[in-house]
Amino acid sequence: MKSIDKKNGFLEYNSTDLLEILTGLGLPKFRLQQVRRWVFARKTTSFDKMTDLSKETRKLLTEQFGSVLQGKELACYRSDDSTEKLLIEWTDGERVECVLLRDNRNHRTACISTQVGCAMGCVFCASGMDGFVRNLSRGEILEQFVRLNSLLPDQERLTHVVVMGIGEPLLNLDALLSALDEVTVSDGFDLSVRRVTISTVGIPSGIRKLAESVVRNGKGYKLAVSLHAPNDGLRTRIIPQNQFSGISEILKAADDYFKQTGRRVTFEYTLIAGLNDQPEHVQQLVHLLKNRTAIINIIPLNPVSELNFQTPSAKTVAWFAGQLESQGVQVKIRFRKGDKIGAACGQLRRVHRTTPTRTG
Image (cartoon, rainbow, N blue to C red):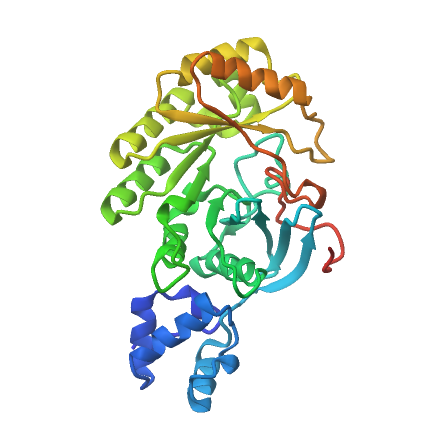
């Protein structure tokens, strides 16, 4: 029988392990599907409320797993654009934030964290300011989906996932892919793999490992690479991790990802006033991307109060994007959401500096 560690909780186990556990407890196999339906489809995380299970079964599950959820919601903030941010504290006292984004196309997107803190040290980003502590487990990653999905009305569910929260996903890839299995399986959240985007600062070995997983498992997740600069000197200033690979190796890995998976890569470019928004940067980006099957996502800097960087003007953003498009590079501009509650790109933190609360 599979050993059970109550501190891990229900979400740490995949279906195979759970089936072994439940049958070892003397429960019939179909009980697993009942419980999964309650958690993923009916948004119920208390065994006591799973009313098509007998009282004895509910008691047994509670005794064995404790709870479906192991973390604690310390804060929920809602902005006037309907973005919601959760602050979650785990059993060891560490914290992360995750975000629910809504738009007028009826997209309901979960932005998920994969680590407590971040070691990449991007100079404009709040996520790494307090340093890296540890990877999140499969269950902790999956719990963010469950909690964000529960913020939606009963008739709504998550439609998209972006792994763009705190941490570098490719440095915790095994746990992430295990969690995403539940997000995309039919008796889980049942999301299309084409609606899942994994964002990386650019770890060539991790990109290739992800490509191998996509080919092996047939799950073609979208890849987004945070470029943020068009030359190595500037990129290393903005992203210290760049010194270990360089843009050329990152682009080669991204090209390989496209060749192996058929999925076009998105390159994210946070536009910072006076730093990476000059005419020479346009031409360098054109040189890098013009002949690639790729798209560049321009992200006007979301300010962080402790960091001395400025958001470019709307005119500069439009000029920069227009110059790229006029020279054959496909461009999208990301519209800001959630910045008033510190939930926009680059603003999430592992340690919240205000009193835990629920606002909005």
